[in-house]
Each structure stands twice: as C-alpha cells, then as structure tokens.
Amino acid sequence: MSQLPVPSLRSAVKAIREATTTTFESSTGTPSEAFDVDRIRADFPILQLSVAGKPLVYLDNAASSQMPQSVIDRLVRYQTSEHANIHRAVHYLSETATAAYEAARVTLQRFINAAEAREVIFTSGTTEGINLVAQSWGRQNIRPGDEIILTVLEHHSNIVPWQMLAKEKGATIRVVPMNDAGELQLDQYEALFNERTRLVSVGHVSNALGSINLVKQMIAFAHTHGVPVLVDGAQAAPHLAVDVQELDCDFYAFSGHKLCGPTGIGILYGRAALLEAMPPFKGGGDMIHTVTFEKTTYAPIPNKFEAGTPPIAAAIGLAAAVDYLSGIGMAAIAAHEHELLTYATEQLAALSGVRLLGTAQNKTAVLSFVLQGIHPHDVGTLLNQEGVAVRTGHHCTQPLMTRLGVVATSRASFAFYNTRADVDALVAGIQTVQKVFA
Picture 1 (tube, rainbow, N blue to C red):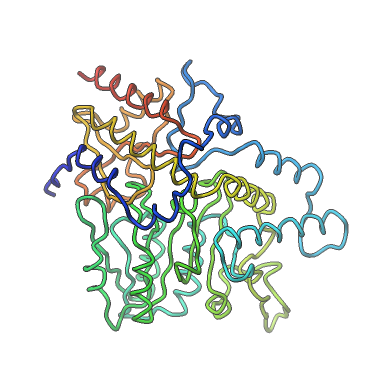
Picture 2: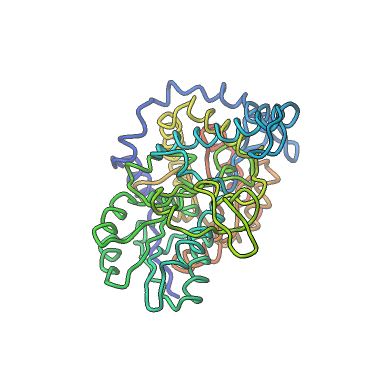
C-alpha cells in the first residue's frame, strides 16, 4: 500500500489553534487558568508513584484512566458496610445495596441526559454493550442482503460483532472513508445509504487519533432514511459532555474504566421503545417474570438485559466517578485537555523525525505518532525507563493502521489531571529515544 502524504506538524498546530468547531464552542466555557490541576492531581494516589526511579507520567488514559480517592473510598464503603446481593431479599444489607445500585442508574441517566432511568442498562463495558445490540436488535432485524455502515476509524469492538452478525445473516458491511487528517468524509457516508441500509454504528471519538466525529449530523441523516444509529462513546464520555437526547442517537455505549471508574462496568443507553422490542441478550436470574419448563416470560427493562448477579460494586463505583467528574465540570475538563493538546502538538512539532498521525481540527487530547526509523514498541519501552507511560501497537484499529500506511503507532493520551510538565517529560523522553537510536 502506498504511503500517505505526511501532514505537516506545524500545519497541525495551526489547525488545532484555529479550530472553532461547535463541540469546543459548547464545551469549553471554563478558562484553563481557573483549572486547579494541582488540587485535582492530589485526588489521585497513583500519580504519586515512581517508575524506574522517576515520577510517573501517565499518558495512557485512552486505554484506562486512573481512579480518584473518592471512588476508591466509595468502593471500600460498599464492600465493608453495604455488600449484599440485590433485588431479591428484604434484609437491611440487600435493601441498602439495591438502593445504591439503582441510585447509580439514575446518576448515569442524568450524566448522559437519558429520558428515563430504565433506558440505562449496566454492562461489563462498551464491548458488551455493542455485542448486546448486535445479538439482540441485530438478530431480530438484520436479513440477508441488508447493509450495516461502519467507519474506517472504528475500534475492533465496533467491527467484529457486526462482522459476526453479517456472516450469520448474509448481510454486508459498508465502510465510511476518511481524509488524510483523520476526518470522516460525510459526503461519502451519505452516498452509502440505500434501501438495504439497516444500521449505522460509529465511534463518537477515535481511540487511535482522537478525531471527534460529527455524530449528530450523521445521526440526523441516518434518521431521514429511517435507519437507527449506535454510537460507541468509550472515548467521548470521559472528555465531552454527552447528551443522548440532543444527539438523538438510538443506542450509546461506554465503559467505566476510561472515566475514572472501575473496570468491568459500563452502560448501554437505548431508546425505551427499542429496548422493549428487543429479546434478551442473556438468560438467567433477575431477568425473568415467570419461568416454567414450557415457557418463560421476561422482566421489563432494564432488568431484562441484566441477567444474574450484576457488577454491583462496580456500578456504584462508576456512579461515584461520574459524580466526581460532574463536580469538576465536563466543560472545564474539555478546556484543560484541549489546551494540553495544543501545547503537546506544538512541542512535538519542534522535534525532527516525528510524524504525527491524526490532525483533525476537532479532536480530543490524543497524540498518535511514529518516530523515523524506530519501532513503536522500542519507543514505549524506552519511554517507560523515563517514567513515561504511553500505549504502543495498533490500538485495536488494524483497518485504520492499514489506511494510515503503518503497522503501529505510539499514542500519548491525556486526561484532565495531566499537566504541561507531563508533556515536557514526554518530549524529553522522545529526545532520549532518538539519541539511543542515533
């Protein structure tokens, strides 16, 4: 495959500085000068660690973010004074745990502005949420010859479930291309629609490049054709204010561990009417109304999709994480991270031998890059010796890597607790890597 033109890093800096898209106009109302990052960093015990004798610089937030003390404390409180199974007993601990679990659902409803709490399904994470829709809605609605629209930017979790469904049903996957900056080409997206189009599934934000996709426009166009849209929000929920009613999406999924919560928990939002019409994804306890050997009837949503003992502690911890983020304000978070993105892009632009991948004007604080003549795994290994944690590899986006003409990248992804000093440490680490391989 031929190499793509290498976008100028200085052009990328200019584009980011000049970005005036509606996403940041609406979500960056708090000036970064008022953002007390030192106070925030004190809330995260893990940031006090040293690695290889140097202060930890954690820049792998797109994979998993860190957990503040308030979330840790909430998990400990549940485990030490509230733990029991939920929904079925009338004793004190069960009623306390049930109340906390269902209160967590309401907290998540408010966080994404869902119309009703029953539209929030607790899952193990984004991957399960997408698989739930594929196996429940998809099996019920996809027929031979139908088409499912994805994009070249998707994470494998938003590709493989649809491939499995398409193979089973005899359907076809259609793919929206992007330009060299990592922005979806919406004219070609619209051209993919025809009478066989049944579903669009698109990431809100690219995990590999940070590109913020124009999902509201994509949803509106799909709806003019009567096509529902699932949004993979794993990379958006930690960084942007998400309003599912304003987006008008049909499904929205994200994970807790990427927004300062525990692993093993996430949510799937779905319109109530769609969820009510879908068959259960898994069978077991607590998702039933009546069971006989002849017939089973199912509980109403959300219980219909939460078979067995759910991740009670994790759901409560996720609600605590959402409360923490809401206390800071998603607008303030977006503003601080955008300032870090601009500064980091400027600093990398000053380095020779660096190729930045993903120069969309509208993006979150992700820098994916390659160093000339140096494998990304070597970059990550040597940066670790400097205390700098980045992600290296294909980032579960192999089709995107093929489109970019690379097999892997190094990815620095920032969170609201990162600082300019972290960026400086990254740049110094890159210079050290280049000296080693000189």
